[in-house]
Length: 574
Image (cartoon, rainbow, N blue to C red; front, side, top):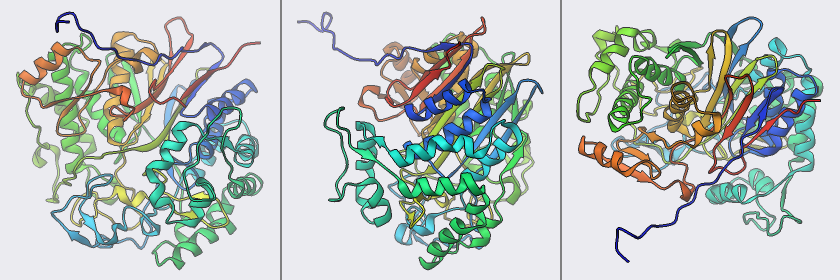
């Protein structure tokens, strides 16, 4: 058989997209998506459903998020014609200091998550010293109080039952636990929940008799929160257990850190993109980098998908990453040139710098951006994994939510607080452990995060709720989802299924499903093109979910075809 006549087999999982005019929920686990859809069907609005789904996903996707983590929610209020953001990102303890994680070798690169220099005992990566102040409960409670229609007890009730009764261990759950099993075994409270009694990884042999993960202590914690409100977690008995345990472990974490935590309602970034407005999260987040990229791409037409188009997109993405590592951090703790980075002049200069060949963008000049500090840029290696969750909701009235929340690493710090069932984050790993950088550690500071949930609105009507999990890959993924929906008119599932690129590493990573001629042309332009076979399930292009309102007013949903638990549920009419 000649090379000309030989063809290799390949595979592409297919999702059948639901359609509804009564409301829709997309989430990374079927139990959570169904809980949210039931809330909509029972008369709740998009915020009610999003909060219920977020509590549930913390139970049934515990490696990715939960009460011990944090996140962001973008909300569109149809009647008020406005967007807002609920900021419930993690913060460092007040006693945190720039040198609290001594470097073993400043020139080394940690082989784990973000590639910061190695610190003594890897204390910023895992264990009790890596824990930041969690915000999930505060943020969800604030959103519900201000913009929902149901009580906290009503939206938490399904999650209490889910934690008590448990959920089946499918192969994806087995795989997630297997990735972290060595470190999970180090923490008895976490091992008690997620490993078998013999310390091995749980797995299901037959659907008729699945292994189950049950979390009775977490169920009791949720029950207490439903009855007493969030104060029991931040200022009451549960918070005291958290602080006492972490202090006994020798950390700087205090009860005052929990008592002083507040989620906030803040203004979103509003980005004009090809006749639409994209709302995303502000500050030292992936939302700012997403907004920067879309601002620049608003000045060009890349809908054709040619090699030249992808060259422009790749240049813009790489410029956003260069600026991100040089300048982005918590703007409440330093000089961060967000307005300049999102200005039209900077967007135009970025496009003008796109030549005929690949270049390595450098951070914008301090003088051009109005930056007076001389702090060094962070110089990380590039992340090798990601663990976050995302969900989307649009209701029948046109209200919408895009919500991303996380523990940061897979199973966060690996620390579960005894007697609570609460698995804690390792949010301190987001900080650059080396002092003298914009994103270095300090007290009460929000670390630079990759989360970038977004809503797309046109003429006062919600068009799409998009988002993804997957660390630094989230920003490029979300931008391409928006481009596919706005520029190419694709449905939510089509927008997700389309081959994507990722520029979060030094190489230009492309799906093996992209046309080989385009890959060759980009290589000829000077890119180091790395092809990734998505069928290996290594999540090289982030893991998105989305809901779109089509031109005829119907909702259609989509989710990552390679991430099998992800589910979209449409509300059925009467």
